Amino acid sequence: MIPILDSINLLPGEIGRFFTDFVAFFQAQPVPIQVLLGAMIVLSFILAGLIIYGVLWCVYQVIKGVILGAVVVAMLVGFGIGAIFMGIFAPRTVAPAWNCTSSAIRHVTWAFYPSKHGKRAIPASSSMMAASQVIVVQQHPAPEIVIQMNEPAPVAAETGSTQDYFCTSCGTKFSTKMRHILAERDVCFCEACGQTFTGQGGNPVPA
Image (cartoon, rainbow, N blue to C red; front, side):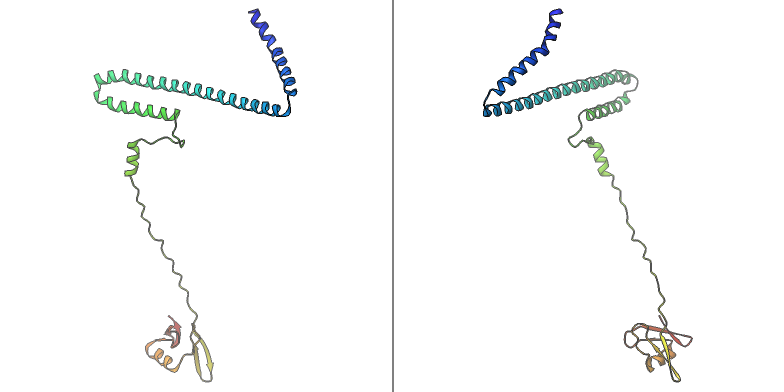
């Protein structure tokens, strides 16, 4: 044990001596050689980092696969033991139990190895059921809100002994014919724009 400890204690000094010698060798080289050596050193560090990353990733995948395999084997062994008793006492429950076990295995597998898009895949049966269930939403048109505004009564103007009326839409003066029709039928139309008027208390009111 003592020689090993001595070697460990001497290791920092050896590393320092090697680094000092390398710096002296590097500075003694011409500039093009220094540039080439520097590029090789950088590429060496990048390659070493990639190698370390690849090794760690492989180790991680192996450990994950071993854990997943152990979990799946445990589930299958548990189902096998339970299936023996279910086959003896309740044979009809074997198929539902296997469906539950296979579903649990799929969920565990999805947890360890999700899909490319980071979402769990939907089993075919579930997707077919979801596709067959279509919700139809019937859209009813919104009720129309009609706001009825009472138009102002025709403008009346007294000229001498007669009272004149004017159309509220176009401003045309009521003719004698319009006044007679309004008096006889209680309804008339503007000769210019066709606005309808009804007689209320002897006065024309827009309909």
